[in-house]
View 1 (tube, helix red, strand yellow):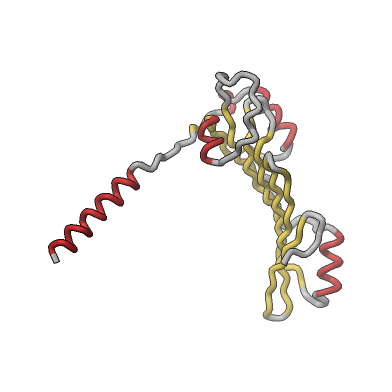
View 2: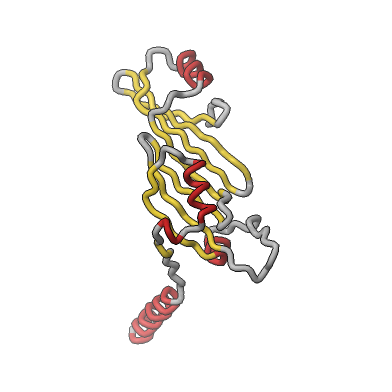
Length: 176
C-alpha cells in the first residue's frame, strides 16, 4: 500500500512539473498609434465599415510556431524581425479576426456574418427540398489562410416543432 501511495504521489508531482513547463504566450495589446501605417491603412481599406475592437502584436516566432503557418516566411532578410497584428473587428451583423503582417497584407482571416441574404442556389435548394420549412437563422463563415480560402454557410430551418441545420459550401452546394 505504501508503494502504491508513493507511486501515486510521485506521478502527481511529475505530471504537475511537466505541465508547469508548458509555455504561456501573452499577446501584447497595443493602441492603433503603435501599429504601422501600412496595417492601419489596410484595415481601413479592407473593412471600411467595421469597428476595431482590439489590436495585439504577435511576434513572428509565436505566430509561426503556435499557429503553424509556415508559408508566411517570405522575408528578404532572415534577420529582420517581423511582427504580425491580430485584429478583432465587428460590424452590424458580423465579427472578424484578421492577422496582418507588418506590411499590411492579410495572412489569416476569419469572418462570421449572420442573417445575410443567402445565395440563390441555397434558397432554391431549400425551397425544392424543404417545402414549407421556414428560415430561422443563417451564418456565413469566410476563412482565408496562406493555403487558400473557404466559404461555408450554415442555415437553420424549422417546420412545426422540427428544426434542422443545413451546411453549404461557398458555391451553395449542400455539404453532408
